Length: 303
Image 1 (cartoon, rainbow, N blue to C red):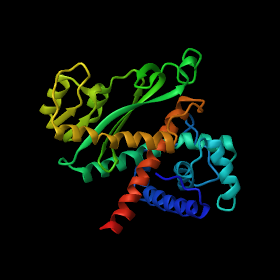
Image 2 (cartoon, rainbow, N blue to C red):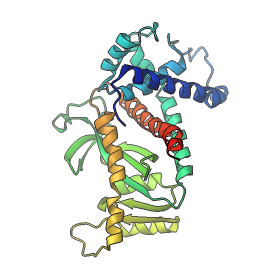
Image 3 (cartoon, one colour):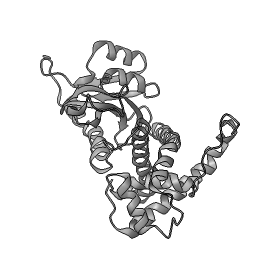
């Protein structure tokens, strides 16, 4: 996802996001309002915000299209370039509280995108699985970090030791995410795959971290074919076709690269567990929305 620095381009993107979110809320979320708990004496009504629900959700997603590394810089960007568009923009603290509180809508949208991409992918196309670290602090601060104490954990990745969470995903060749799971850092990759693969059929390509006879047999019984790389100490030969298949794992690595280097999903700035989860959810939603826009506008132009 290219970072858009031109203000006119950003305005166009903001309008596109708002139109999509507005239609989404009208078509789906309003149908769920009847099941929500009503305000009562023991549960007072939620605080009203100066901005509408569609505006707040649109801004939460828009942040990841602007290239800002944190919410404070993004808030300054809104005050500088979009003051006329959002004259009743709340104070920074209230704005962050609203973004965190509304992360439930990000989860709903994220699930919707995954359902769409799963149907479009089908059984015959390749799927790729992998996991990556989401550190919440430097490893040297693991004992003093209090924000995610009891949730995050210490583990080791290919880049060394880290303290935080682990993001598991399954994607297709178009780098559309089909399944997502966020777990504690020490959670195993193979267990993460078993938690995600319920509706995923066909061939799943993975690295050597998913090697295991028991896991492969489970996949076969569930109408899946798990194809993995081999470990360095395993004496197995690989055909040229198998080698080319494993090289296609670059798709899932590219997804992680975009999420981390361009969208900044890995952060140490939130000051609450909800802040961390909200950041992850909005970032993943923005990524999926970009892929959905590509599907709507770019693919028809190439047809």
